[in-house]
Image (cartoon, rainbow, N blue to C red; front, side):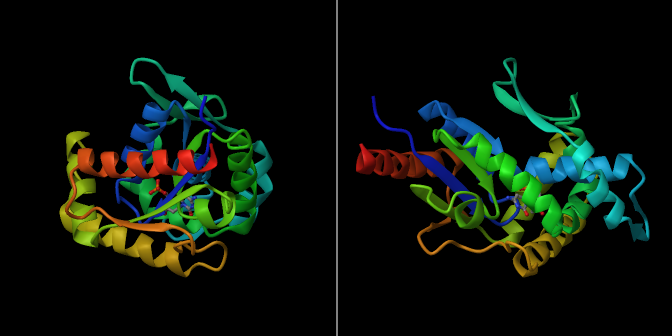
Length: 232
Ligand code: DC
């Protein structure tokens, strides 16, 4: 049997990382971990516990309450994907609202939050055979990953994709607010002090602006197979 590798997929918001990460995990029979969902779950916790309001955010109390936050993933056999749970409750759809998207990069800036989530992410990947997507997977979480991909596409292309996704779900967001949200998150993710979004030196830059979902999957599956052959 071939050896298992770790696949780290990083990149800007809405570049389609999770779509291809899920496809790769399924094809290779690896586990898939959506690390962004974990930052989103912490954001939802802060909202549900009154730590975020229109003009203030109680960071000190969130840090104090981190010990009360348990995030887990459970496989949903009907949908064929793992879903995220916050303290035992399925929050898969609650973490995808524009409200959470608008605040999550502020939560992801907090070092204490990052430390907690990175430790858990490393546990998920300790036996290899994992595909994880996020912003710091190839640089911080798995610096030794055998395959690192850095995904990119223009902000307009990404906003259009996100807009369509939200519309399908019945969310009434408009295109310009989605584009603004993406640009703002790009800026915060790239400029924060702790683990900013950056391409790892040994990551492969992958621009999917002009690729279909299928083309992108085939190209990345090929890279994964080559990486597996290299260590087998
Ligand atoms: O991938 P996403 O849009 O669901 O991520 C949500 C936010 O979490 C995004 O603004 C950046 C942050 N994030 C992060 O800082 N590090 C990760 N490994 C994953 C996500």
